[in-house]
Length: 525
Image (cartoon, rainbow, N blue to C red; front, side, top):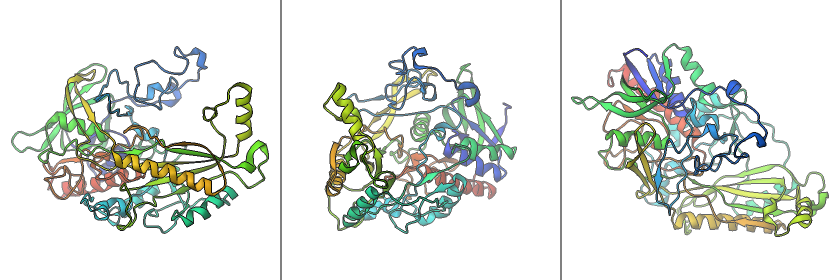
């Protein structure tokens, strides 16, 4: 890599970094992208092995990925090795930080649920009376959402509901709902629930990542250089101007230290990695809120029911099958008073079976029970919004470092009554709905996973109009350092119940166009 000054240095290659590169290079800016891991080569690096050929029989090496519930021995190499990249937390307050260090990052593995935030999220402070509004509204982000949805080929059914904003969708043919879904929809309508369908990104050729949808166009401009296995240690600043002037990074394999210069720096390493980098750099924190307000979403609540007339293989045609999506229906009005704020969506699935662990029988009796219930079950689960709290934060643990000597994060997050009350309301509401349909309740799991499990962590570098209580402005630009931008989920003020990917992509697009415009006007760089 030649010793030169780039127009923009981008740290991270996932959805947010890929979008930044796509926009900035098309604006004629010379960009360097640093990624902490290697390029993935599925054709050469992926193999098929029977479980008996794996040393840990598919379960994975103990201690390597203790916080990644999604990991097993078949996919272990796609996750960050926690022995090399540790973090700490209070043993009493577990936090799951799930990371990927490959070119493309977590964009290679996301579930593709593609939602817009609504003004119930952007202006949550007005609804809840706590002042925690974003400095932007849905109207500000709408044109960017539409462009992102076109790139990612998002499919969905338009409904015209303000709590579930429509988008620039490919509208598929869903076909008729099964009778079990129709029964729930009628009962749900009486309870203020609206039944729709999942919205998801189709992408191209089986992938909806930066690697296939964003980076190829950026590379085609000739304006993007990419360096893999480059672990950024610190954002550097000019001691005379205070502006960012580049980064120090270390080669993952050789441990060689390098410095690269740029007129502007864009952080897109993922919420906690970007914030870790700023904390280790000792910059962009005149507000004192850098690292604060870490939050994500509640997963794990599940209710399973069984339709009696569908058991023992006797279900009539058209009774079972299909799915439904119920967007947030709680706390949409100021006068609605509950023992929790914010809300949750419900995902309904019809026609499945029951997990053997749900029954008390064993042996032959268990097998008969499982066979009897096969195809008769309707399940409901949720995505719930955790509120952002000042006390839920990250800080640098100077006593623990990663394999390259970079100080690790300590994560301090605790759930409260709001989460517990929301979970109770959700599980009870779904159970009551299934009861009203005349179905047997097989199980009700009101407990939820620890913070971080959703892999939708946001906050810690929140945007706002006031530099005294926010880190970034409405264009993802540092209040303190005008040529420093953070374009990943760290900028979020509230997370919503929605998968954050479409919002992250849209914010990155908007911020990158603003940065390019400011550089052309010579206001930056």
